[in-house]
Image (cartoon, rainbow, N blue to C red; front, top):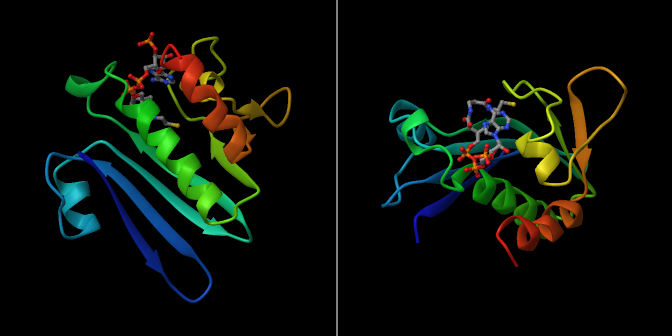
Amino acid sequence: MSYHVLRSESMDALTILFYYNERALATPNDVMVQQLPRAYCVMSDRVMFLMQLSVPDELQHQGIGSRLLQLVAAQARLEGCRRIDVDDMSLRFRALNNIYKKHGFRYRRDTGPEMYASPADVISRAALIHGG
Ligand SMILES: CC(C)(COP(=O)(O)OP(=O)(O)OC[C@H]1O[C@@H](n2cnc3c(N)ncnc32)[C@H](O)[C@@H]1OP(=O)(O)O)[C@@H](O)C(=O)NCCC(=O)NCCS
């Protein structure tokens, strides 16, 4: 299994780092320094906010970003979140083949980057995306 989760609880927020690597690493810093594929989330008030989704160029288009999004959704459901929020800062901002749109996220308004989905919205897309 190449996907790992680091969960860290502080007074008022929970941060969760998902990453992809052949072996489990010890600290979030290792993940950042090594530029590993990762999704970084902060959870508060039953909302999971996806702060960062990043897959290095040489590993893109192999389904890793999608898998990370699915892990985020599964964890959000486990944590009892009602919603996952993300600001779409991607190069495919509002494009038809935007990764977040593919995974069931919707834009909050007619303009702007704010998107949202329920964990169930995202999980139910997995089968469609992976040919189920
Ligand atoms: C967006 C990103 C995480 C996707 O990771 P990935 O592992 O290549 O994703 P997958 O292989 O699971 O899925 C690829 C699909 O994601 C979508 N996608 C690819 N690049 C994208 C981008 N820059 N922005 C939004 N969606 C993108 C496309 O639908 C693509 O399908 P295609 O290969 O048929 O074109 C990766 O391209 C990346 O890290 N880009 C740079 C950083 C970034 O834009 N992060 C999001 C900031 S909000």
